[in-house]
Length: 314
Length: 169
Image (cartoon, rainbow over all chains, first blue to last red; front, top):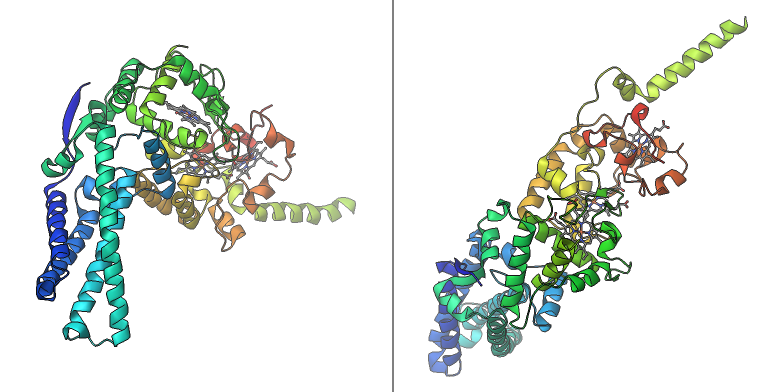
């Protein structure tokens, strides 16, 4: 498969990631002895500063650093989680939706830890300037310690998720966080560079889907028109109402279809409508939308290839 | 004597009709104003149904529709953020409040402070269509009250002129 390296993580994201890793390690090592607590406090303060910068970068940073690039609705996270469990997660250049949940959880937990830590440090136990009752100070300390104990667990899942994703995507994601580059299938690259408007042909698109399916699952053979036909005609009811692709595109996708709102849908089969599957972005948008509607989740590259090969067989 | 008695009645009726259609009345003489167009809007919001003229709903309705595209009348119509923001701005600028449609003002008055999500069931349109039997909207060629273009051929341009309305079989 043709592959290209794509710059995904900018320098700020990478420096943040690895300095945070070291700072957290340091904070753990300095948390036990009274003598090291001043160092612990300084590390905590730096962590807090980094969190603030990262949050700002999440709004104004480069594309994959932004929250809007990776934070997804609970429904999408669930759909991704299901595909992940099946071992066929759809490709994501930045954080995948589950990884995004981890990012937010880690940022949130670290914020709680550093803020409560600062309160403890400035409170009566360390004779700081902050006036707090003994009980309140104690409660804050409990939160600080409880959250700090939860952190290693989250980190275990974080590292586990990265390793598992590396396996499924067959690329070293840890190295990606050092170099900033991830391997992207050419097609993803194309979409990323806005080359989606580039003229494509339905058979070329079929090849792209097949290549992606192969990248995700080494056992994948080739798109299968019969499987695609089954997916196209099978009625499912993810939202209560029974629908199939044929509900709008009709059982013969060479003919005109109709949406629930009554509008005519031009034929889907390329033989009857040469404009179909000539723009990857357009095809993917509708695959995403309509698969969610009918199957209740995104279609995998394998399934898209199957459907397209069914449509090309007509 | 009789014809003389009838005259004021006729005048009264004509007056009432002119009053009722004060805006639509001049419509017959002037070319209908074109509803504002935006290619992005037609591409994204015109795939499943008519790209409804923005002047048929107030800005707050468009705002609410765009905020809930993941569950849009049971359909997924999600957009990426830049597209949604661009549409949000354009719909706000061309909503009923902007008076882009002759009917806008009447629609606003008829819904008072509410935030309707449907155009087809606006009180104003229900009353415009109250002479049509409910059955016609269920015909396969129409299939939905929201399928304005089935009966109003120039609906995309915001032209709902009753003379040009045709009910398909």
